[in-house]
Amino acid sequence: MHTVVERELEIELVLSPEHSIPVPARLRYRSDDPYAVHITFHVDSARPVNWTFARELLVEGVFRACGDGDVRVWPTKAGGRSVVVMALSSPDGDALLKAPAAQVSAWLERTLRAVPPGSEGGRLGIDGGLVELLRTAFPG
Image (cartoon, rainbow, N blue to C red; front, top):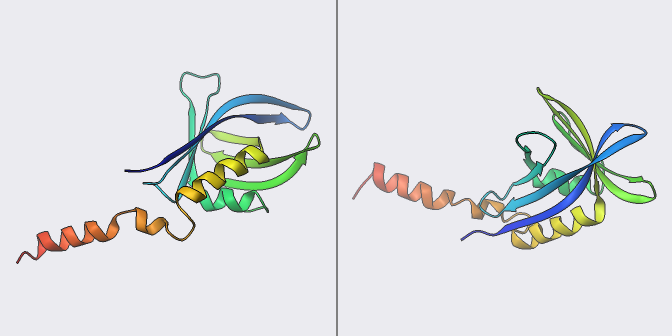
């Protein structure tokens, strides 16, 4: 059995330095995919936009700037409140998003209780799969 940790929240999509729009989003973590976090953005389109990246990147990004390439995360202040900024790049376009730091941190704490850092590998079932593979390849 695996654990799912979800959180609905409103994230700001930054359109310009002066203008942002709220976007409903869902943070999702599954203990059977222990290294990843999933974010679904419910934008005004036929389908939600999904992003998956390393949980460790988001954990670090709550405290300091990190990431390069497609996903960069850093903490900052906006309008007097703490936020986590996510810069996402894909062939379909780029997005700059601001999420409330307190809500993201509380959700991350729940994921870290579900699967503590360093224990992720034990959740993948690789050892059992390898034993089964070897048993099939070398019966007897």
